[in-house]
Image (cartoon, rainbow, N blue to C red; front, side):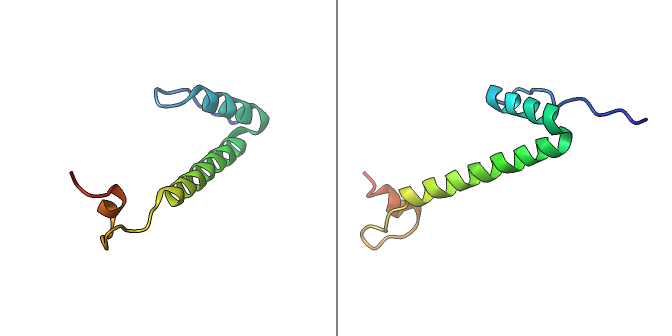
Length: 75
């Protein structure tokens, strides 16, 4: 019989909440649950990034375009 791989271990770049969610997903459904959790967290992060990016975008000032237009005039 094949052995199940070990649960994912915490690394320096993981957060405690993510580790706790991953552990719960692992104990509840193994790798499929961990992968689904990763996809859900990634989709949530992408959605929040898109919403934040949309809310800070401002129309160009003084006929300028691009990143400089959002920063305003140079000192």
